[in-house]
Image (cartoon, rainbow, N blue to C red; front, side, top):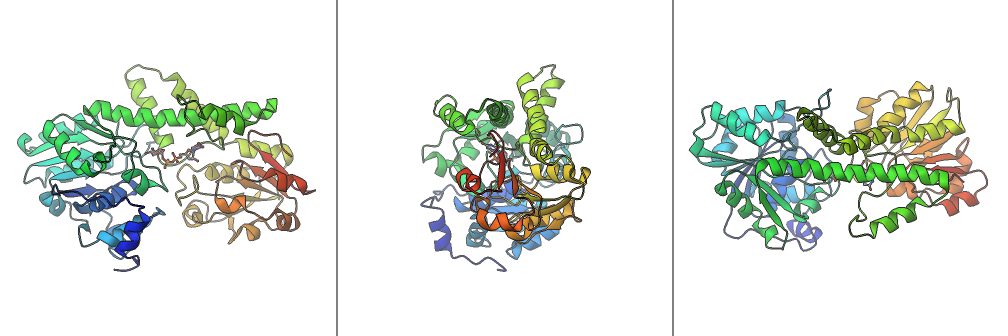
Length: 461
Ligand code: UDX
């Protein structure tokens, strides 16, 4: 079983009493795509008591999964896979075999952002074509990927046009609300389950597989697919708008001297606002917010609807990603031949994913300004090496900061909070920190004579 090494008991204990098991409504579920969404979805449905076959066209990925190699840094996922693999969880590249056995198919393939900002649908179309060739008995085909409004209807028509008997399939849409780094927890503790369906059979089938969660009083909303598709985009877009708004307020607080942390805290106590996505920083990244905001903006434009708020959110985010560099240049106008540390490469703490990470913008800008870059991240160095193979990478915070003229903190990793400033002061050429994540303890830092901290949203000390 390769690298899987945790007992089933440990798995169930680590899930803090989640211990949910389906009743006698066990289903055979095929999940097409073993990325963040597909692998978490398939594994968690196995945990809920179903037989699950996860399918991917990437033979290497499937071979790795069979050997216990899970490419993503997702807490609890590996332990859960170990617990259920070859019991009621399997991996294969054979779509036809999986579809022939399943009564429910989730499509969880990537729908990345195209160059023009729209969602790329090629992988979804390929999955639907493969499925259409493999349907032998009644099956519900459910899109889990985030897709443009109208895609579920398009999928239904594509299957019909492929000659599949309409009596043999129903289509549905079931958006995910999983955050990277907490995806297993988020799947088993959703705020709501959203099912978009044209048929009662599809809605009933999906409610049955989610029954263990519904039994725990988790709201299940059954709507038409267009509504479900819109719920996903609108939810992510509003979360992103909250982040851009608090970043704008942070930039204002920096001028007025108001305390952005207190402003955000007091705002969040208003139940109508809520505390989440009110943490200011260098802007949002990741594989979802940028892509989903862009896709929704383009979808609205095709209908002649202008989403001014969302457009502003995206413009603010692009500008916010440049704030750490602008701050650095205000301290060191000429970066040529300067050595700058970049602490934090992942798009957020808790993941090794660097997609749309603020560090990508920062490293690119530092190189444009002629700086020598030393980069460090607890888990995301290898992915970043594929993008920037020729910058220097440290093996620790101290080794990265040694002899640096300044340091940018771009990801809120806990170990950056605990950096020992007394020691740091001695090993940096100039102990200047651009703390874009507002995680350094100012009292400690400012008590040190030479250390300069410049934080987004606060006056530098
Ligand atoms: C997001 C959505 O939260 C999730 O519901 C959806 O299914 C997928 O996209 P994810 O991208 O994994 O999840 O991470 P999230 O924790 O939402 O953070 C997204 C970005 O926003 C990160 O760059 C993060 O640093 C930033 N962020 C988040 C802030 O800047 N401030 C905040 O308060 C929260």
